[in-house]
Length: 207
Ligand code: 5GP
Image 1: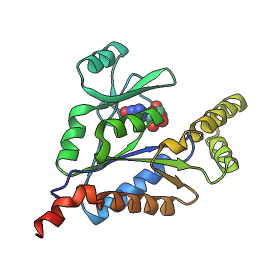
Image 2: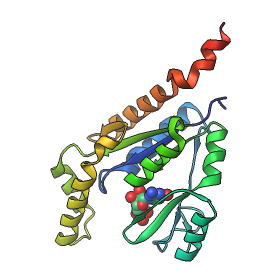
Image 3: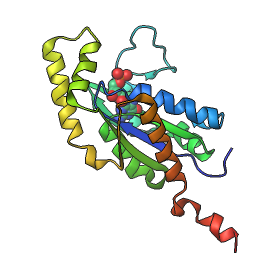
Image 4: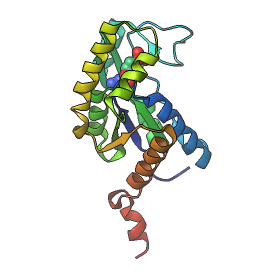
């Protein structure tokens, strides 16, 4: 394991853009190169479990009161509301993973990514994933099958207002090809780790 602190890779983007698929590929590539180098943050949410989801696996499922208590106790580093429910990142496991040099990939809301960046600054890189065109995004949203026309239009409106905020992120990656997008994110991670501000001791040790 590296002597360096791990990197918090905070990724956001509109619903349907394929964040989950791209991040799964990034994780696979990172793990191949360096087994054990990726840490998993399990978020806390007030939404109900879906299907086979289990407490402590996909999420920690908590009541609104429990969630609010966790915020008061300082146990949540960032949180946001999404479709009437709270979602948040537990503080302690994240500090532990980054401290032991593991990179942690996040698929979280825009506010969540920006909050991690404010809080952890040099340990965080923010990436926004864009669709190649709005037509492709619409197709992907329709491809899910079950949504009504009204809901699809609402999601597209939501996507446009999110894309308007892309400039608040440090990097933009277009997901026109999962493998290409994943490799671009790996390149970003590599570049972040090579920043002089993070490696100045390596230079000092030579003298
Ligand atoms: P879902 O309910 O579909 O699992 O997730 C809904 C949204 O919540 C997704 O856009 C996901 O990115 C976001 N999300 C999941 N966990 C967190 C978290 O810990 N913090 C924030 N800010 N957003 C989260």
